[in-house]
Image 1 (cartoon, helix red, strand yellow):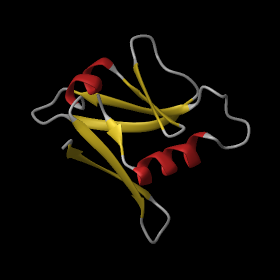
Image 2: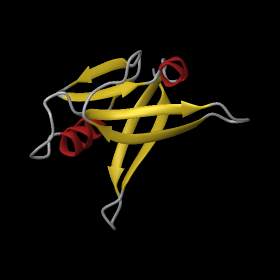
Image 3: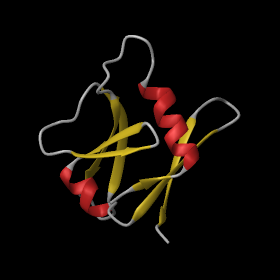
Image 4: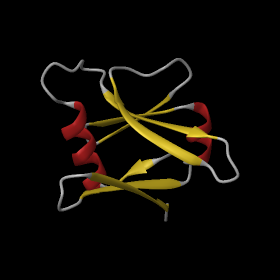
Length: 94
């Protein structure tokens, strides 16, 4: 199952605990089939039917079925660049 670094957990919590968002809000990762898999990340109020839920250190991430398969052995990391843009990265677990 996908795991999150401490940085990723903190950033996901910051994104999804804004005033006015539901308690079920999380970051949703989807994947599209292409010659190389591509991932899209967005904030969402709740999971879609069939999503896998990853909860770690107070952060909630929803994965569509394809992303859940592709990211099963990965670690999600995140950082904020000098311009304030969030950047996500993936690495192998272990």
